[in-house]
Amino acid sequence: MPEEAALAVHGLTAGYGGPAVIEGVDLRAEPRKITALVGPNGAGKSTLLKTVAGIVRPSRGHVHLHQEDITGRRPEQLVRKGLAYMPQVANVFEELTVRENLEMGGYVRRSGLRERIEALLVLFPDLRPALRRPARTLSGGQRTMLAMARALMVDPSVVLLDEPCAGLSPAFEAEVWRHIDTVRQAGVAVVMVGQNTRGTLAHADWAYILVAGKNRREGPGRDLLHDHELIDLYIGRAS
Image (tube, rainbow, N blue to C red; front, side):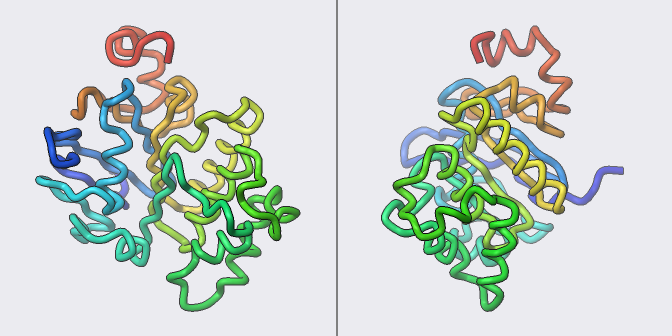
């Protein structure tokens, strides 16, 4: 019997004032699982994450976090409820130090800020030597680590990651996946958009293929990865 969903999306439709970018999308994410969104460029994957995170308002459909309807709630309200979002770009404050970035990530915490930072430095040890450096001086991989750590400052039960491995070297990409797996093992439901389709499907417990803003297929990531006809039809061999 499947576990109760940490995040459930039903019939979600949203856009930016014109035609809908996503239409009637369904999604389910369970604790301790990696749920991936893959598909061609322009399929609406990032828009779906932004809508769930409260940045884009839906025109139809519902979002439930642990069975509570959070549809249309503001991002700061969702953070307090345990939903964290890491955008692909502008995901760190470049002029602030690494420590200040982490403190900003934990702004809704009532206590335990120092302890939480210390716990995340254990998880992301490469950040410790850079604590007093401005974030703009970090490498691409280190910036991704910092952005993930900022998202985790609120002890989320669900974390949304928009292309966390984009532009990284294979070595840093492997490191990011190790961190994502650690987060998953801690009981967090991870929902992520992956740029590297094959790598993403290989790691995903469950994956959704979005095409033109709609659900096309879903299933265990490795099953979809080995469905060559599906890859050719919806993703393309170059992905």
